[in-house]
Image (tube, rainbow, N blue to C red; front, side, top):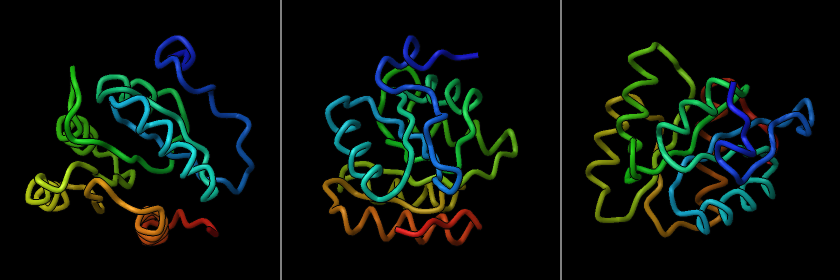
Length: 146
């Protein structure tokens, strides 16, 4: 079992979440951006667990009850595409939103064909994040009022 404080060093284990609150796994190697996104997602009503790469993301995913994943493409050790591929090969249907810079839009569109439920191109607004998270999670039966 992964100890989040030791393994990822940035987020306490789930357990403080309200029963009606969804938990998202945010996987991004940019610690400053991850913290800003965590705060933004918290403000939208989500509980957030962080990981710094796909390998950590898989470990955290196995250790926590996660309702959805926000996943960056480019990361060291294991990128977002490899993590998405691994989840889908294991038959895991958890909704995944991919994110990357605007120059990666074609790749992001391809990843939707390969099993992601949506994508965001950086930079994106809080409104875009809120609308896409709500749409993706509502489509997959894990809606939350935001």
